[in-house]
Image (cartoon, rainbow, N blue to C red; front, side):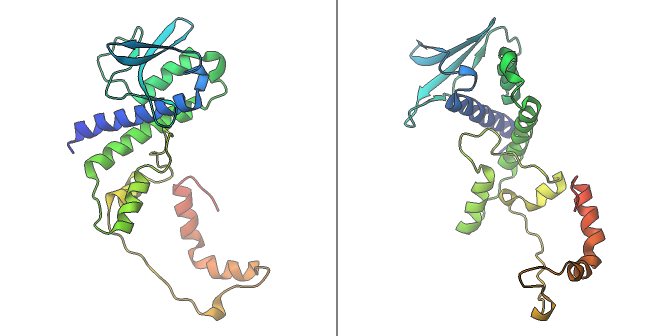
Amino acid sequence: MQNHTAVNTAQTIILRDLVDALLFEDIAGIVSNSEITKENGQTILIYKRETQQIKIPVYFSALNMFRYESSQPITIEGRTSKQPLTAAEFWQTIVKMNRDLSHEWEVARVEEGLTTAATQLAKQLSELDLASHPFVRSEQFASLKDRPFHPLAKEKRGLREADYQVYQAELNQSFPLMVAAVKKTQMIHGDTANIDELENLTAPIKEQATDMLHDQGLSI
């Protein structure tokens, strides 16, 4: 998939996931406080708060809930940009319309996650390499999206970009796996671990592990 197509497709998917999640949870009364009408045969959910209005094309799904009809555009009253609406922009609009409620939401965290999710999904769509083995392929699909009705299900956190490129299942990259055999006499076992013995065994790699965790913003 060409890069610009992948970006647009990713933005559409993440926007759809966000809107579906808000509808499913009825966040800020986006369903219960809205007017339902039809325009040219399309069901439209009209959500109004203060002086702002959003028109969301929807359909009633088999799950007994409204879902976003993503083949049709969302209309935000007063929006002048000609660029396609992104999930982050839609989220910003919902936050501005609900200033009395948004202090209870992790606004910045969600916005960051939406942007990251769209960026990562675009990369996956443009570089996706499905494996022939069904078990590996199932892991790839699980990595693409592991939770339904969750706009951040695509987002992967904690890896550097270089690590993400190597270790994410959907990109199907090979990497070495090192296995060590340890004699049972060298294993710590029993009801209570011997902390001194554990320190002795891990001492050779502790500095390396500490540096690695530090690079990830973590600590032992």
